[in-house]
Image (cartoon, rainbow, N blue to C red; front, side, top):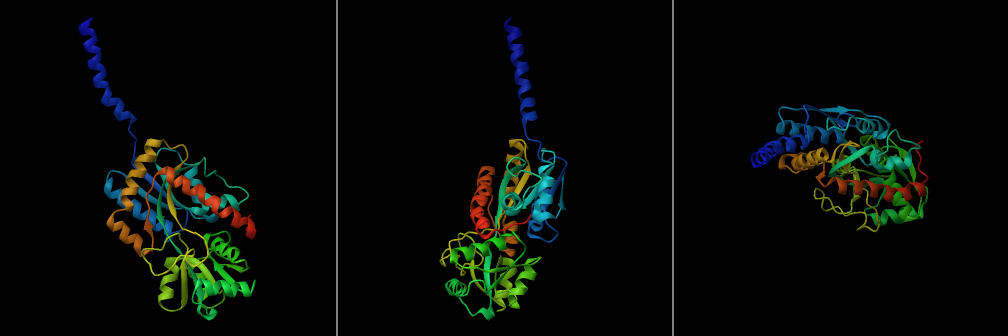
Length: 324
């Protein structure tokens, strides 16, 4: 009996490594696609390709391919991730619109961001910059607010689309200032900032990368950043809050997976990608786009998504913003 018992223990001991091996997350699989819900050259596309490049170096036996699936304000590509098999073969880079704000703007979405999307990590934070036309004759947010309040409904602002962060941020500025502005949507940041340069629109709150080169050339005046804290890349520019307008409009970006992806796989992806975006060479490439890496836990990223809905719901209601 003693020999039988010892034999069973030996068999059990031999089985432990095999059990541990089968319970380990199968990440990465042989082929991984990274969905970018906007076109080639967009900021989500740039970040997705940085991640794919580094993952390819780390795992040379796996292939990481970025697929651009633009459409419906980012909903199309995000929906592809939501409906993919939850096994780590499909992940995506997405932004606040399709993950949070669009739930308030669209009468229906083809996916439920809470149930159908697994939050992996917030990748970056990117400030927007409040810029004004030189013809407006103001040099600070305080001067701009005074001018807007004295002339409700007189001035136009440019955005990169109805319901975009650039639209909502300026609506929030008008609400906080107790006045009204006229919204003129454009198709892209370059078109919107050109409208400000030409004084077709008198102001805009656009991604910093599209504003600062024009501001440095003296074509527009940059007044403030939209983030809660000053940007490390443009530290001399105050925040809106410092300037008397309590608004935080952060153009963040995050990594997502299909809802139902096993937690060990989500955690494995999180560990790899957080390490990647904090590599010096990746940080340097992000800095060119005026983006700062974040890299947090899935739980922290989910809280950020939920907080975005709470932040913009009252603005969307007050400004009566509708997409469909």
